[in-house]
Image 1 (tube, helix red, strand yellow):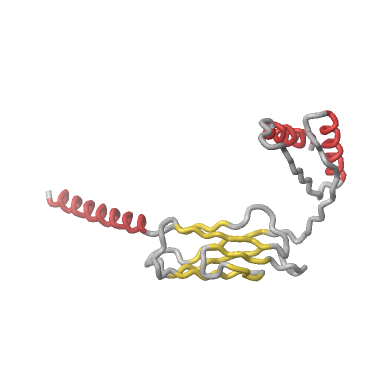
Image 2: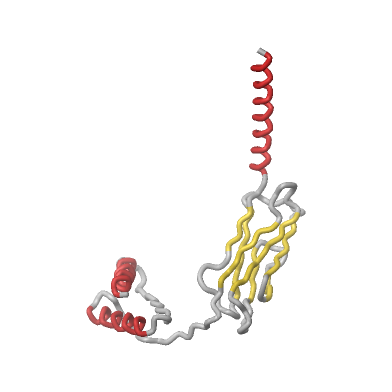
Length: 185
């Protein structure tokens, strides 16, 4: 009988401790940080945004550091803008680290995000305009663009679609062009 009571007391105290820990964790904010989507070129500005899942106390402070580049704006805030280096020595990776103070015991204090950049500047070359990809002439022009891309595999093909206001077939046209390119490459 003593053994059962003893085990019940231990089990009950562990449950209370676990519940208290769970309540404490629920009060702690989680922190996330997001860098720019896509490629950021040397000399361009990259934006990093941090987010707290719960509101921060009024005495919370923020301090950003970067592994390369120059902080343009956002020090002491949750949004940072950094100008990437514009020189040949830049390796292409930039890490932005946010140090947060004042969130309380047990809360994370730092979080980082690394951005991969390209040292290669893209020089756009205008190839042609495609009034529509739905016609034979439009598809013929797309075939020429595909051929040029095959001849220069390191090139980047960028398509910009312009549609008349309220073109109800715009999404279909984009999907058709995308499918054509996928099947052709």
